[in-house]
Length: 189
Figure 1 (spheres, one colour):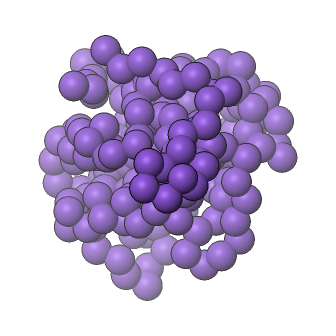
Figure 2 (cartoon, rainbow, N blue to C red):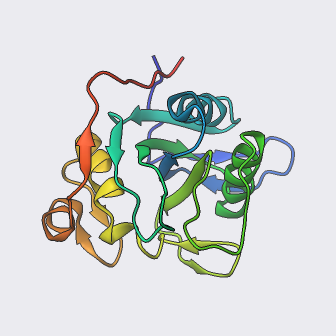
């Protein structure tokens, strides 16, 4: 069982003495190509194996219709992972991209093309970023029921930075095509 680090504590790097605040992280996972559940489980395992990244919750799995995707795109499996970390947001983004690459995610010029794995940083504490490499909070997650619903399952009182309570955002989002899959589960070892 993973213990949640005390959010009021600060971790000091033993080599540099540099202080790193513990931040709450919300990561959205999705897959609509190949062994979808296996890809999501692999992402959960890889995140849990990341040093200084403490998984505190994994949502139920949802099957969702593709949103703004090319014709012929298959349904996604989606989930959300909650964690506490002292890692900087840029390092988390590098880790997310490395996990996607390990599952042979192909990046094309086609927006929202089908993918073996999508690992999106939704929120990293109160960090804001508008760089090409890293946009925080995620620019469209507050509109996406396939992110909001699994996050709500884990933290019904959560607040999306600059947007408000996720419960309110979920009520306003289009939940058409979002179906909980009680027959599928993701585990944290």
